[in-house]
Each structure stands twice: as C-alpha cells, then as structure tokens.
Image (cartoon, rainbow, N blue to C red; front, side, top):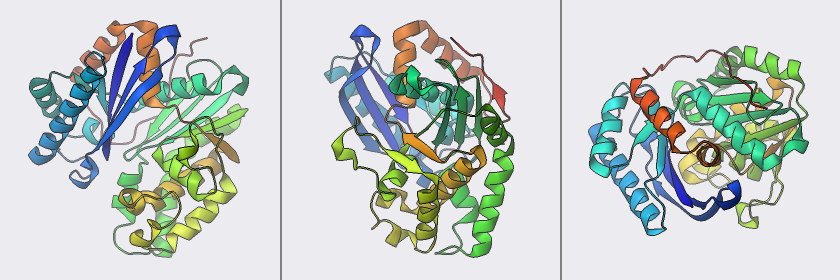
Length: 336
C-alpha cells in the first residue's frame, strides 16, 4: 500500500509518499514547495486572500504529485500559522473546495503526540524514558513518555516566528535588553513543563524540527547529505555558543554560517535561544537530532489505526475553536 502526507508549515508545504508494507513507512518520494506563509501572516492574524491562493496552489501540486507516485489523496494538515488564524475554517474550506484535499489542523498537543510517536519508533525501545523538544514557527512542543505514546505533552506559544516578531525585529543585532526580555518570556512559559521533565529524569533526549537540524549543523553535526542514519547530537554548551554567535550578527550575515539557510536566518537567533533555554530548564545536556517527526507519526497512526482515525481528526478540526493564547500543560493517556 502507498500513502502520502502533506505538511503545511509556516514556510513550506512538504510531501512524503511512502510504502507501508510491513508496518513501516518507507519513503519513495519527497517534495516541497516554498510557501512562506509566515511572511504574509502575523502571529494570530487572518490569512489574507493572496496567501490562501498560494496555499491552495501548493496543496494542489502536492496532490497531483502524490497521484503520479501511485498514492491516494494525501493526509494533509496545517500547523500553527493556519490553526490560530481567525479565518481558519474559511482557509480549510477553500482548500477542500478547490483541490479535493481535506486539509485539517491539529491541536498542539496532538502534534506533540504524533511527533513523539515518530521519534520513539525511530529511536527504539532501548532509548527508555524519553523527552522530546520540537520547535516550530508558532509553538514549542514538549513531551515525555516511557511507552509508545507520551505520558504528558505541552504545546507552548514559543515558536521562532512568534518570538522573532515580538522581540527581535527592532534592532540588528539585538540589544542586550531585547535578549533578556526574550529569555524571560521563554522561562515564564516553560517553567512547569521544564520542572516536569527534570522530575521525570529521562534516559534519552530527542529533538526534532528544521530549527534543531540547522542548530545541529551549526554546532558541528554532519550535513544532511550524509543521510538520515548518520547519528547527530546537539550539546547544550554548543547551543549556548551558537546563541552568542548568532546574536552578534545581523540576519544577512547569519545566512553565511554553516547550516543557516537564508529564508530562516532572521528566525535562527530566536530558535537558538528557545533551544538553549529549553534544554537548560529541562536539564538536558545532550540530545539526539531525530529525522522522524510529525509526518512519520501521521503515517504510523494511519498504518496502525486505518483511515477512520484521520476522518475523526478532520471532523474535530472543523469543530474545534482555535486558541491563539498560551496552551496549558495537558496530560495525554499513555499507550503501552
């Protein structure tokens, strides 16, 4: 069986087409389309008509590509930039009407659960009690678990786009006061989740997302061309050095550093500060950069639970009311 998943993020639309025989999603084709929704939509603001047109076009191209590779209509989801938009339902309806793809939004806690599932399957049971950090443009997901699914998850309004907009747009490089204010915001939002991770004492720490991949490369990890099976680690001490390095440069010069792409250079400093503060508050000194995350989690759930679970996700997506404010720490039921 061949299935596909489409991930509508703040900057790109990503497609993964995978074979699923044997219960493991083995990718046969990947593609991405540059969307840069974050450049058209301020945090918590409506998605303008021109951005909706760009989104529809990208999803339509992804669906056509999926069909060419022999997969059915893709499982498609959008993250915080659409989820928190006041006109979220109009955006989802436009995509469905014009492409035939049922785009849905996932609560931050569900994103954390699916990302944990993907990371757990990649890392294996030998990783034991595991903590996870995932930095997006709109939110930071934190999870911990001993089993296949996490024992608890938290989705916090600490994304790179949100914090860059709130703290780092006035000056380049930023002032010392701006940096202190940024760290205060992160520490305030992370206090409870950080305490829980320290109390749990995870055996393994895993980080996912482009932010951590780029930080890992900046801190000396192997480049992506060496493939997903090359082990990559990120150390808190190295991330602290990366913060100092990035904070001393304007965005244009950050893009010249190893691993920092030009489109993400402006948000790279906020991402590094989030990463360092989160690792410090959770007590994590070293973490593994994991290549599997939410897209693989979606594929795994579909393989194991069939299409009915995704239909329910889409139904809830249309019923739920988005919350642009802080998301409280939630407990998720553990699955052995």
